[in-house]
Length: 193
Image 1: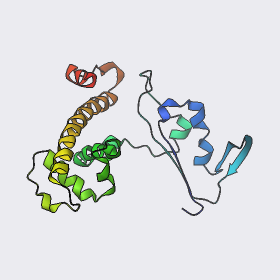
Image 2 (image 1 turned 90 degrees about the horizontal axis):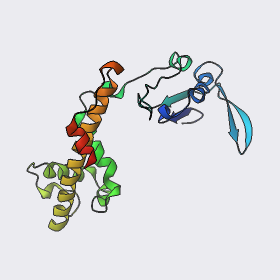
Image 3 (image 1 turned 180 degrees about the vertical axis):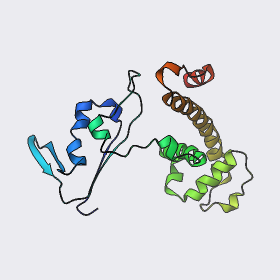
């Protein structure tokens, strides 16, 4: 907004610590960073602007090693565990799986451009709740409602498996290495199907 800058770097567990150290100067008073623009090196001076660096990552790398933010960067940062921040938001989190997958399915894709209240009612119906189709904002045919609800039922099954697997991953990530075990065989079997 305006002259202010927000820099978002995702999946930082896949980066080298030296790459992350490049951002240290952005988090202190100098607000300068070296970069490349159109093949030429350049110093970016961001003093006088509000600047936020947001980095997101998982606690483990592909090799299974614990990921650690370089100390010089961590000392200048506020660090949050989204599992702690999102406590009590299970239903919204579960619904986000469905919301984020709408456009990937031809049956559900039209819902992405319509009133989301319809989606929420149809999800309720797919979960077995009594929902009147008269409450829907869009004029769906009986066949459309049936096809959407059947697709949502299958998607909810997939979502529930993903949620259980993610729950095991989060529980494992919260443990010290010496106490970490493989997820229960029910979760491993679920990911294989």
